[in-house]
Image 1 (tube, rainbow, N blue to C red):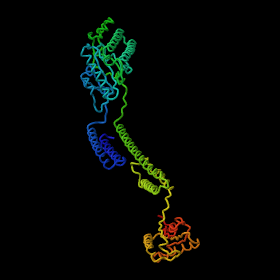
Image 2 (tube, rainbow, N blue to C red; image 1 turned 180 degrees about the horizontal axis):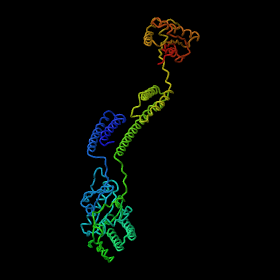
Image 3 (cartoon, rainbow, N blue to C red; image 1 turned 180 degrees about the vertical axis):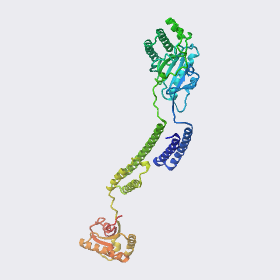
Image 4 (tube, helix red, strand yellow; image 1 turned 135 degrees about the horizontal axis):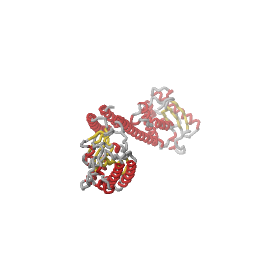
Length: 526
């Protein structure tokens, strides 16, 4: 995907996903969602503009570079700020501070090459300069956030073809301290000396001089340069030296410390011989940087694809987490309503009935969610409403609501009839008037009229008297209303259902009564 198209499509996608998360997934109020959406919108606009500016001013190409530093880097670069190698571009940094703060977009740093000159006399100024490069190297590694491999190149004047004296394999085990580097140089020197003596050089005197030069250059490097670049004891995160090499840069002068030490030890005059060809521009030491560990790189198109998948995965995780939390709250609410219903005993009416109504309303809410479509805040395959509705339905199925209480009016027989009689008194109409209004207010219900007596006298006579009194009341009600006679049912119960004891006058007075009850007709439910 082209960079400009990526920056046109990716931010709106992220913006849309974020707004969906805020408004459709998170359990927020409208005000909270609006307050959260505003900064999200502003942030996406800022990132969008920044991405478009970068897309218009940059390319997708990433260039591998080798950074060159050190007191003698200019000798290798021949005054050029950069040189093109076989696989990398070589960039010269003239000052150690440039290395410490170096950063360039679309450049991938493969490593650092520090160049020193073995022929320059050691002075008070040389040591601080190399120490500054060592500090800049360590700081640059911290700035990059990953290891910055380095190699050391020692340039020395020597009567041979320019670029010679390079070891065939300059790589050493990564050394983060001076003792490890010194041991690596010792092993490297032995290998180079053996190669020099077994080479096809016809002039054995030249082979001897090469061996001596290598020996003293290595000793000079180990004594003068390595103690400055590497600490005596490595620490966590210390930069590592991966290669050490030497390179011929011209004729000997006989004035450098390593030359004088070599002449005194070997009793030879190294500068007496002249190179077969005059030294030309120094070649880039490709063999040194070949020892740097390869860095895994990803093409920009794959990086953008990784960004896309990562973003989608993060938003999916956010949606799934929000859905899981909302379903957790849904389960808690269902459990609270179910527990409130199940904790009440059948005797705790009407509280148990109210709890059943609440549970029924919650079950209808869960069923409506399943019918109308599961919202995003509960979806992502985590919705638990079906199982919760089944549990609530099972609890309600087992619930038996209490039978409705009958509506009963009791009338004192003394106010309606004379003793032992079944004919209504004239003033009985006043007592029955309220009953008449009550019946007319409930025309859909049937009427049951029960006659009751005390236990005075014969039980059979009392049963007939109670039946006659109930029929008398029915007759008056049929006449006073428009209800047919079949709307009323009568029964005489005599003294079989007393309300109180018949041992005293007060109890017997309560037992002499007429009860009028409203009942639901068959097939009618409330």
